[in-house]
Image 1 (cartoon, rainbow, N blue to C red):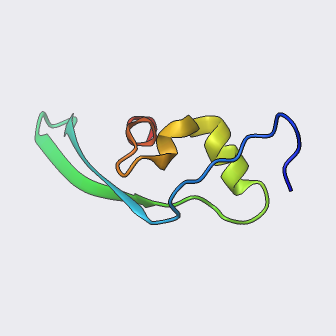
Image 2 (image 1 turned 180 degrees about the vertical axis):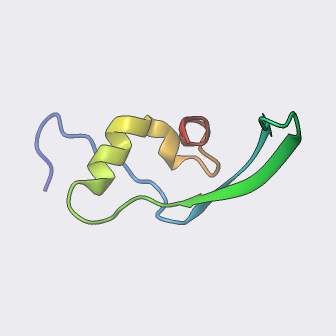
Length: 72
């Protein structure tokens, strides 16, 4: 059911992966490179989809959303 002024948003509920690399120097002046991956999806229960849309916007409907990748 939709009321006047309500907005309906469709976005994928798949799992997203964000690869990242980090470079740091230790106290011994050694260089460390760390590579990792963040795996995320939208929490489906309760207010999860609404909070995701409110925080990340229309970009969620894209195949590869940019705003969540930059935020993470």
